[in-house]
Amino acid sequence: MSIWDRLGDFIARVSSSASSGVADVVEAVRTVFSGDPDLRRRVAFSVAMIALSAKMAKADGIVTQDEVRAFQEIFEVPPSETRNVARLYDIAQQDVAGFEIYAQRMAQLCGSGHANCMMLEDILDGLFHIAKADGLIHEREGQFLHRIAEIFRIDEAHYEVILSRHVNLGAADPYVVLGIERGKPFEEIRKRYRKLISDNHPDRLIARGLPQEFIKIATTRVAAINAAYEMIERGLRHV
Image (cartoon, rainbow, N blue to C red; front, top):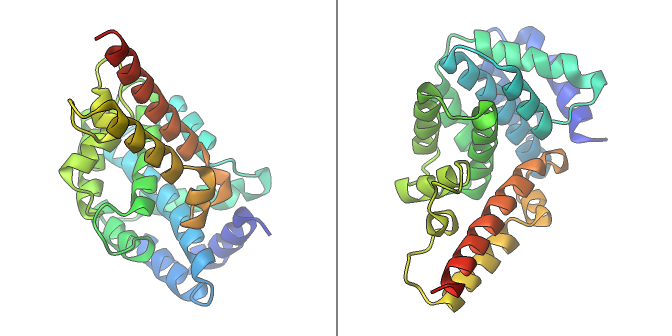
């Protein structure tokens, strides 16, 4: 059974009784999947991405077709489950609870409890992918994403690394993308690059709970890392 089958069945069962909105859904994830921590992480990740996407759209005030397409790139939802995903999205948008309370609950459910948790970074990366779909990250979206990072305990330096992966590399510092200081020996830069590629291999993401259906996040991240490394390599070659 795919993650969408499990998620769709779960949403169909809980949405009718989710009188308090997403707060009820979050608690339901914790209890319904308590006996299977791996499945709970994957469902929690999916719920977080769908609901926080809805909250971001509400904060921005408009949902563009580009953002819808970006959402669909990450979420290859089978037609049979489209209604259930839309139901959760609507619950999140209509919920009067602020996104900060929800983000805190999801951080407790999905996160490792440590700063710069990679699974929470995966969620933030997905949100960036959607936010930038119309060509730029709007001011309200930027404020939303920065606040999510704070709640997720992603420190400022690491947030800058994530942000740099989602802006035009013509303006972004490739050293920031790789999270390494300028002036380091090329061997250290290559070592850092290889570690990032290894850490973001699809098998690694699946192992930490990212559903297989959402590997688009990993491929986008790896593309930015590759582009930054190639830019540094070309620059050093001409020095």
